[in-house]
Length: 388
Image 1: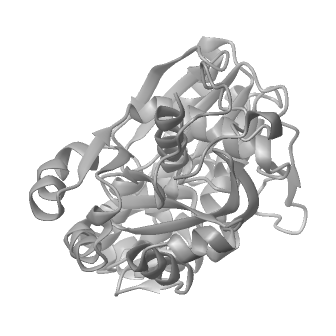
Image 2: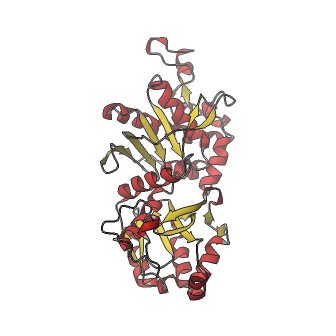
Image 3: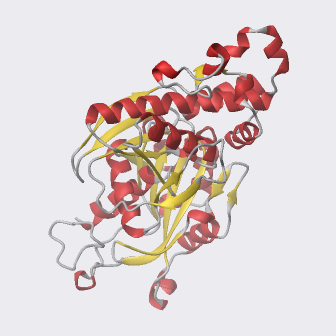
């Protein structure tokens, strides 16, 4: 079992109370898990500073797990390792290694439990730090079937800790969209944002539903708003309206759709802009408003319906986020969560809404590792607990 060498800053800023260079580290493998209502996220730390002695002492089970996780980009029919998000040279708990980011539908949790049984993970660890509703829902299954305890961690604490840790490692983690009007894609550019002095800021976590947190310092934050209309709503409605089966398929359809065939715009009602209240003609006045007409219903495609569903959900999230920011007196709004994965349409809509309706006073920010922050927070907690 490895030990912390405090003289080389092996605790990596984890602020472990009482560490005098003799901190006993947890056995590998190191995982953090966030089990949401729609998607489960797993962050795995792979040490790359393994010595010859460690390699000789390493049990075959650990070797098998490492090779399986890092040697594949897909696991079964649903698991995916997001190779483009991989972070190398990460210092964590006295070790140097690589962070791997893996996701799979929560509906495939049964297959994941079977995989942990097959790879004999429970022979190396007896606890996995986990957050999200699934940490409660599947706690009994993990304990009875593979003898693993899910140590349940607060979802919001894990999220905030993950954001701060990843941003401290990766200078290009935070970004924004300049000129985010989706009608003029050539002007819209993705640019880095300096998040080194973040407070205060708002976090809008878009998962199956939406939670909004006001963050005023590293340790001072609270949930101030939210909505049940989130990524799960988008996918559920798309499945009903279009017959799609996956999130990726829904986003692909939305990319090729035209929401103006489904939504009624301000200009459809006023014949142009509504100048008295500064409402441009292209703004949505009634989501799915055209669907009252049989003629319009006959003219729309499944792609149009998917696009309109995406616009409806995104506009609602943006409206709530803007009002919350104004109420809290905060001008930086960070949007995270797997709803934003492979979803530049929603990001640009959110950026445009924040900028337009606040007259440039609110900034919409995004993170490269958008959906994995909670799982990262769980990984940090695993190491913290063993070091303290």
